[in-house]
Image (cartoon, rainbow, N blue to C red):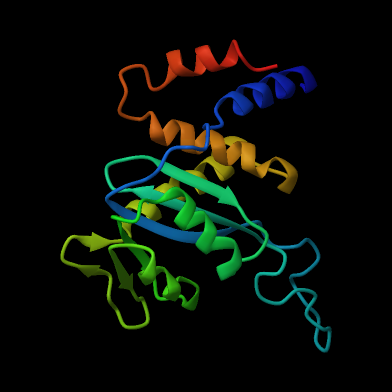
Amino acid sequence: KNTAWLLQMKIRKAMKEDGNELLDGIIEADETFVGGKISGQFPRKKNQPKKVRGQEHLQPVFAMVQRQGNAIAKVIDKVTREEIIPLLTGRVTATSVLVTDASYIYFPVKNHFKSHQVMSRGARIFKKGIYHKNTIEGFFSQFKRALIGQFHKVGVQHLQLYLDEVCFKYNHRKSDDKGYNHLMNKLLKVE
């Protein structure tokens, strides 16, 4: 079991992208949270204080997906402007149109990109012409289905490698060999 897991982790390390690719065009960006309930939290007895409130026990993940293109995802410490804005400006071209939710975190990005389209569940705005967030929601759906059905349980220290695997599969979904030859070439270079 341990040998198989070690081999899988080496393959996942080879699936990590180089990190110098820029996304261009219509870019959808969002964050999600990974984790489950804490054991012993439910059911709760009367007058027993809550052990965890909100999302403090969940790990945030930020992703950007180019429409009809590639995905870039990163495990982040906190969902803040200081974490997300540098990721956006560093990996997305200035001529792109950014599509996000109505979170205050994304307000300053209008100065960095051609346009910023906001979709708001509260205001029931799910689509504006050709702009929507269905692509990023589909990517997160694939990631979470992999966590539940394929990986089952993932530690925070290895979450980025599993995220890299999902990104690699997503980015090579249209190639004839689904990225197999590219992966084999990278595996030969991994230590």
